[in-house]
Length: 615
Image 1: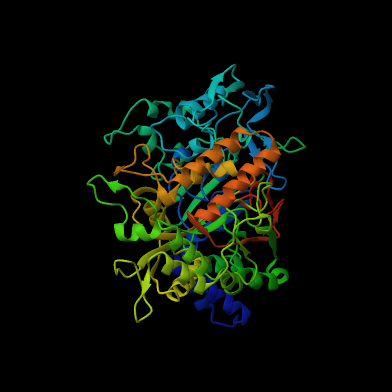
Image 2 (image 1 turned 120 degrees about the horizontal axis):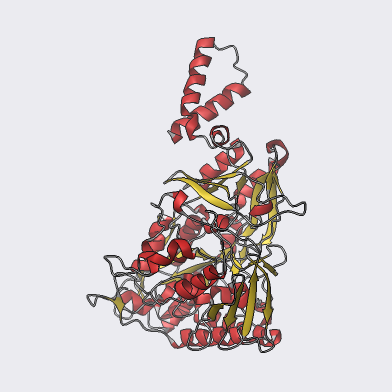
């Protein structure tokens, strides 16, 4: 039905432009009838059928993987629309602001903090939101060793990875007791990347029982096959309906707590239609035809789209925004995992594992990738060549002029490094290892992101110049996610990771026991199939130490020095190879009012609760 609708949509548009209004009445009537029959697929018809108020139509490349916040490892996700934390980060200033908590007090020794919740908070089903929900979220979910949630990594404190002791003082007051000072605490409680509060009255029972797989029922609760009306939220929007592969519809949460300066309840928008379109080219067509209100909110626009849309701003009744460098990273990584599966078979082919775990090999690959060419050809010069794993907006960012190692494009240097490491070349110029094995590996990325696909193709060409054969394969994003986070069945991949002000927000990626430490993923709670013999390297242990020290340190000058050492270590050891990042590019119709777009937040609509859609 979707394909037919698009054919008809553009056919009618062409007929209008050609002013073919003299066609016989019968043909016009039949075409109109057919359009009417098919109109149920069109997002604009949601308003006329079910929503009498304002509507915002957005898109994402893939469906959500879960409706359970604790299971989430992907971006974008429903939690951007539907959940909040005790605090939030302002997407313009980067400052931590009150959210579900109206205020907080910290002791002089920085080891106790008391949050006071707002008066009259409610869940989307009308049930009161109290301190019990906060304690439940932090103590029973995040700190639960049987729940493999990414949220726990941002809250581990000290060498032992202890969690705050969280207890209820009253219905509106919650106390956090820390084993030691913990500088990232407030940001760890902030939406969208910190801990989001979950409903105890709806989920507590799932933590008392186990399923047939031996895991807590909570882990399999609120998956995407759960009826949307059963998902209870505290954010501006609740789930109304979900059609896999097509769309998820949100509607205004009548119990949301925020009000504007005049006392009007927020959000202003009545309904959001979130379409799933696995092609950025198709997203572009839909935006240009008026079917989408915003494009590039969850992943920056492709540079060629930016140039095209910039020329069409006035005619198309929209604006294209450039918020400066995006706050995430784009990287290539090799699978450095030396573990075995349950049967004792190595996760990574031992021959390839020896290459990948050879520092000289990784350094040679870094020198062989022409990042300037990627920026010029694929990003139209709008990209940002990356050398630091910390976002440029962060006060902890270290630049090359401050002593950060840089891997300039130098194929000859790459070859020299390989030869010194014991690799050799045959008469055809193919790279062989010291045992005569042809150096060849598979590189993966998500097929829906055409820029990454193009980058993968160029990297394949670049590495061919130093004799390495790359079998490049672009696959479904969710399939890629399963490979790198569950089965560990991959050689190398290209993917992005969100960033921001606080380095510790990426602890789940950088610390060796982190749930997103993909390049050497440790055994995870409840994860099947199990692995054995996992090893952590000395430099990973040093990264762990630096992150613990950085979180403990409250003096900003000393914190900057610690994270500077972290950045230098990453560039020396190259557990990941940083590539070229996007600029924050987004397009939105003039009907969308209230946007505050910058490159700092990962989501361009971070202030969704105060946006309006003008008629």
